[in-house]
Image (cartoon, rainbow, N blue to C red):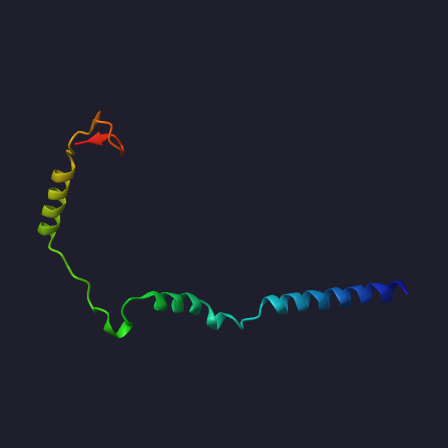
Amino acid sequence: MDAYKRNFKTVVTGLTAALLIAGCASPSSEDQFGNSVRQMIAAQKYVSPDQEARELPVIDGRKAEAGYNSYRKETGNPARMTPDMSGSAGLGLSR
């Protein structure tokens, strides 16, 4: 009787393990993986995919550097803000 119980436990344990492994190894959802994300991105696009620009606009290196330097020159030295004592509403700062 003891050998019967041991064999029964072994068979039940083996079947349980096989069912658990078979349930986790199901490839049924792999073919749909990522479709919901692609659909969401396509729904948020402003232009349809057949009307999109084929190439991105390219900027010359010299023009990019000149624009960057101009930006740094204009925004590098802001005017000093001083407290406004006139009692007006707002932050109390004026240029």
